[in-house]
Image (cartoon, rainbow, N blue to C red; front, side, top):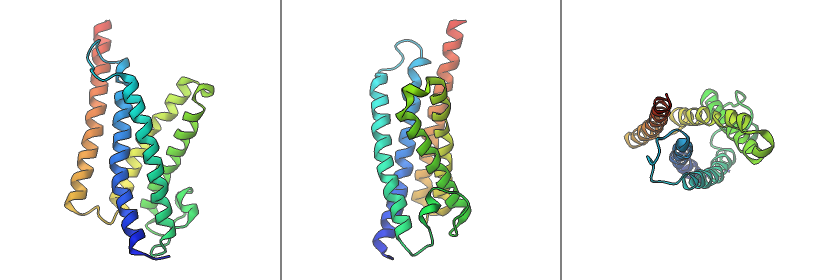
Length: 185
């Protein structure tokens, strides 16, 4: 099936996914901020950021499914179902497609381990959950490399804003951790 609608839908979901996955990462960082921030430093309750993190993650997963389906169903380019799960086998822009596949595979592992978090243990779950950073980087690079809008000024600006948001959140989180260690010492 070859339809301009599928192509536009795939482009749109890819762009919205960049924003949603960035929000997921930033909200995930904010949800863990409570352990390292100084007392009374945050006005947003941790349960609220965790709830947003989970809900935005769920929305992103649904949209990701739509993104993958539209990419495979649209026959304009040769992307097969297995390309969504197995990296390096794709014929269409194999490197960039593989980055998207790696991101998707990491996200699947994160979702699966989050569903069995109580049985897995916090340390193992957290170690696996931290691969979300790698998934975000891979998906962002995937969009830059394979996205048909990636060379437009609005798309570049959106990507820079998303990168800046994650970098800022990471630096704030690391700074709060360092501050907390100084207060304890």
